[in-house]
Length: 123
Image (cartoon, rainbow, N blue to C red):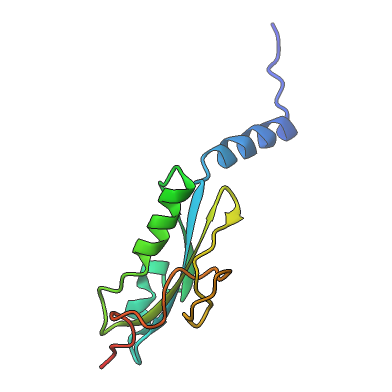
């Protein structure tokens, strides 16, 4: 009778390959600024943190850019003051066209303009 040979390094290598194969090509990075007193609610979408990365199902760079642009939308103007959104596709940073402050910058990683009509509406 043959014994089964268990190789921990081989198992970990296979597990690592399976994990990396499941990684999303498009990752959207969120950084929210909350309205005063609304931090817990504003950050809830990032498990209570001000910033987080979320995998996106986009399969092309163009679709990833569109997902990042769409993520700028602020439907909770009394909770979230503003957002900075960045994205990567297959590990490469995408250009959003705005700097961290939301000012136009051809090389900026932020996809959200600082003067969006749905930003800075806190009460």
